[in-house]
Image (cartoon, helix red, strand yellow):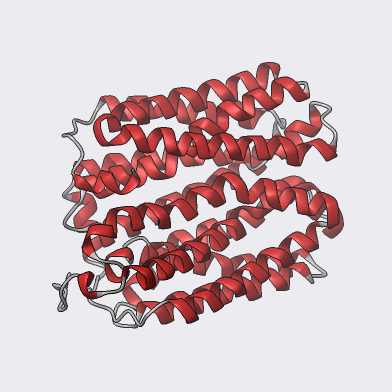
Length: 405
């Protein structure tokens, strides 16, 4: 059984930088569409639940299902499509996203929505795993770090802006319009990749054997997977239900989109702050993320009862979470520089599994305990990250960290 094959073609220094960057932007638009699709229901749980006659906890399955499916599809799609042109794989996956969101927009039952969310999960896991390392194939070697940062910026921007934008569209025109808008965005992304991306023949082949090898044999990867699981599960356990939390605090529906937009803007700032620090202070940034997220959720549970205080705490929360994707991805790339595709598959799988489990157990807590309980549980998980960090030694980041600058 073949493991990782050595690339058979030289680095892409003979490629046109302009065409390469247009292709990078097309992939970035695709990954933005993809991650926005996965996270869109966070701001729309209440209206979707009301329209389709399900509880807010049950509506949280719209986040749980694609997260669970993406956790499985990340390694599966990477392995199964190992010899298929990467452009073709990405185009098919983003096309599924567009059509699935349009199906959700016209759904007459919650079951139809869940089927569409299942399909989105397949695309999320496969697309993200492949797109993470595709910059090397699109631009000259000297541009690879920044191109990689731009592609991962699509993940981060979707995480911090996709939810509030979708919420605002949903508040103004209805949740079906929000799903339809993201569906159209997915189809636009498909067209952009067809027009702007060159053929990208597969050059590496990963097998299922490579995944446990990189996990068992690398303490840095194991630590990165652990902190990803704790922080992402804790964040989405609470943030998936931020709309009902705000409503319980008496915040008017018309203000929620604006408050989530503040979270998004703060998240972009957090991303840039982390990007400036992680090259030399990666561990310290992870510690800071844990402390900021813990503080934000605890304070939200105690004092987030007015638009002003809720807005301030969402800004703090956004600063912490905005730093997460670029920081944790850099940790993984730094820990496994010679097995980036296998390690990235594990990271993407863990990230999405954590989204799913956070939304799932958050739903149980909301329905069985109280809405605010998710804030306390999420804070506790974020705080446990410090224990993991205390038990692992790390060296200075390798050049992979520059991809985030």
